[in-house]
Image 1 (cartoon, rainbow, N blue to C red):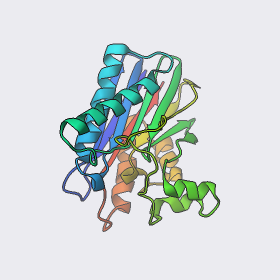
Image 2 (image 1 turned 120 degrees about the vertical axis):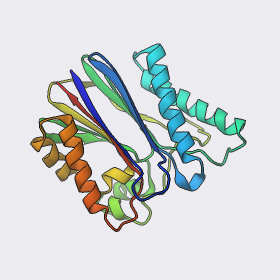
Image 3 (image 1 turned 45 degrees about the vertical axis):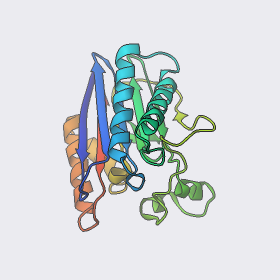
Image 4 (image 1 turned 180 degrees about the vertical axis):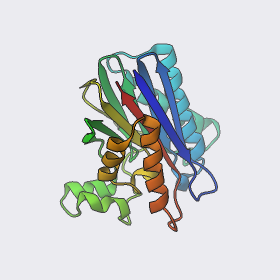
Amino acid sequence: MITCATIWEKGDREQNEDFVGTQINGNEGLFVLADGLGGHGKGEVASRLVVETALQSYRTGGSHAGFLGEICEQCQNALLQEQRRVHATMDMKTTFVACSVSADSICWVHVGDSRLYLFERGRLRTRTTDHSVVQMLVYAGEIKEKEIRFHPDRNRLLKVMGTEWEKLEYECSDVIDRRSGQALLLCSDGFWELIDEKKMEKCLKAAGTVQEWAQSMQEIVLRNGQNRDMDNYSAVCIWCS
């Protein structure tokens, strides 16, 4: 069984450039989140377009080996085509993260700094690594992981959808065996910057439902975001049983 809860809020901004989407078919599903880049204009168009393209591709083609990579390329191509159609090749950029849950496996793909977290038995097992300047600083040993959240260069991304790719820029996970008790969190930087992994785990262990998990994390995000000119923040929370 899969249960899911979504959060999609504009924070203190006038417009919400995040977008989320889910498609659950019985015991399987696709979950998608995108964060449009506000500094490049029409971010809300880009994020909605790639999420809707991904879900439509899943509905018509289903899942198979390598399909997340195909979906990512379809989303990229659809976005570039829309840019050309409206003469906005310098605009309409977005991050992207998508997760496929099948009857026996889980896998995901991402571009940019929207994240996926995988929890097992209430503890964090893994997360995606950001395609960003500050993530590179972590790799280089110049800053610590915990310093990413409020680093002045945290919004400088190295990979996004909506720029011409010389090579495939998305990153696909290995296939993970699906087990009872797994939890997944897809979220934009406006969400994960305001709640650390220990708090995510604490909320997860205390929650009786996926909706309770989402709500308790959102309360922390709102509390930590007070007087910070909060960015758009969004999340997709998934429980597998």
